[in-house]
Image (tube, rainbow, N blue to C red):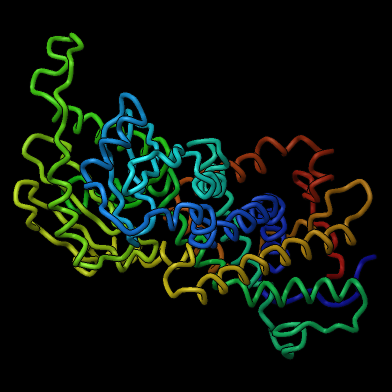
Length: 466
């Protein structure tokens, strides 16, 4: 029924309500997906420790094989492979994990530190939490999936910002604003649950959405290009923007390592036998790196170019604890050391953001905070669907009424415009939506009625009560 109450005076309330509705319509399935997969990935340390438990106490008292012998056993277990990274064992009793590779394909081999028996082999991309990571960031669909997730995250930002605009009390008390009123019937209950939950999770949800963008194929690549221009050199960063980029980096490192196998390997396009590569320097390097007590896991990698040094790095999930070393294979000495606080400001900011995003920055409290945010987003999505289901009119989508083009919320429009410039993929999708609304739907009267849009060249629809 039409409401006899005066229209709200707050600028463009109905317009922003529509933005919120359509953004939610697109985002909710992805929000549920990202909340579920993200919550699972939060507990990566615990899950991987559980998976590796059978290999945590395999060594007994007695002599151990050298690191070089362990690597040789791992390379032999995967024919045609070369060493990519040696992971320094956390304890003397656990199996040694060695990552070997063939081009862009890497295999993690678990070696008994004494007998050199191969205890387990698993491809890096097939490890459970690696699969969850790809489900979360690219829907297991490569670059296309990354673009879709980035679009969903960008529109989720609009959904949250418009929701905060709608939540703003505007003279009301705190009931239904900071806590739900539980005696208003089902309709009022779902409205309060949605509004109050949205407020309490919005700020952390915005942080998680923004801190995840450096991984995205489009925005992460955009950031890398901007950095390369500003810094006047190719940007180097310790996070990847897609699985394809990661595979290319692996393949390049693999090719460089293989080039070290012999000066005449594959000379003239002819496949020749490779000279065996010596892993003897690894024992000297392990003796140098272990006393430094870098944050685990610590990975030691061979040279990838003629004259290049060996490298060692902490690959800790808590990125501010990471350290990078270059090492002299002949002497075992440290050539350079670069701690996290020596990185460029943008790298430190992204590092803190990623660590917090993954729940690694401040221990279990970080995991709990992120988990509560994810559960809040699930509740927000469910309550939004419940409100729409109860209010939708028969034969229509149930979008809020199409408002007059004025008055406009210029600050909100400016904010969305700024987001479109800062997030180019979102900006392109925004222009596409506006073009479809203005041109493609102008003559589709049936579709416009179903969407709740005003017919072309018609007056405004009467507003219904909210």
